[in-house]
Image (cartoon, rainbow, N blue to C red; front, side, top):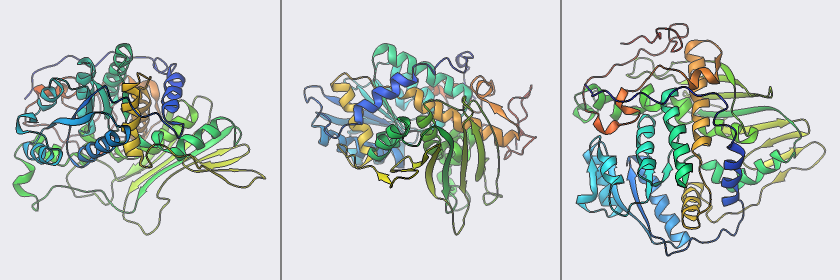
Length: 450
């Protein structure tokens, strides 16, 4: 179906990308931790393109436009790109982009990035395509806002880590759609946690438990809209295929896992987990609808992770908790130290909307030449989610090194580094993973196909 492409970057050590995390996190926090952020200098024009203009891409475009107003820069969206022409055309109309700057097809992103004057790329494709698009944008010397998660397997994460290092060398700015890192309550509270407000951290709990299942675009109701080939059908229903979505632990729960990593200023070294596919049973696709995972950080602290998309009458919802030797905290808002009253954050930022604040922070970093590169943070958290997923799928403990250096590729070969050359055609469908029957670490991997 596809031309061969180069293999993903070679194996790397677990700590190879960790050492600079403190500097990157500190610089990112410094860009947003004061109420009176300087407005960007209007002399530098920002010319943006959106790659992937579904619901989140369209939303990110509106957030960018609002950030332009608040910062006072000369900024606008000049091109849009999507695999499907109908989506690209809708976005073109919504953002006032001329027909000749409206691109569709697998190579649409390369055309948009190559537009003269473009210096800001918004990536909101399904997660499986992000490594290829991000790599192309960085190689072309563009600043990037990328939605989360940024990959769906170890090989994809290796592409992201390598491109993030290249961005650092080139002085490019990168912001990610882990918007809690740009939200006043989280910035203020987590700084206090890291300064010892609840003592030494002894445990973390994180949740993304929906009250029902996510959307599912398939079946007779959707008819020809889904397309004729395997790839068309899967991309149109992308949330339900591992290579495109990474499963909901990766696509949604990455936000909460990112908070754990932010508090610890580190990533877990191993985990075990379980889960199942219950209410999705009988529907097309491969993903599960619930996971329970226990992670362990290098210092022995455990993070307990729960995510689900099952209809229920009660649940913890979407939240995080940190427990310490001197109390506990909700990282997004409050600290409850022993013997003291509750402290609540009152920090205000330039925008009360963290989705807009992400773009404000990126724009300010660009025009004022301040360091901002969130590639490692978002890739670490993506890989944390992937590690938990594979622990559940395999029914075994999974270590960070194993998942980072795993050779099994969930995606089509070209999707990693040159998805522009992909074509619609056949592609495998996996059977929904069954523990002990699905294990990417086996040689050869155990991944039953339909």
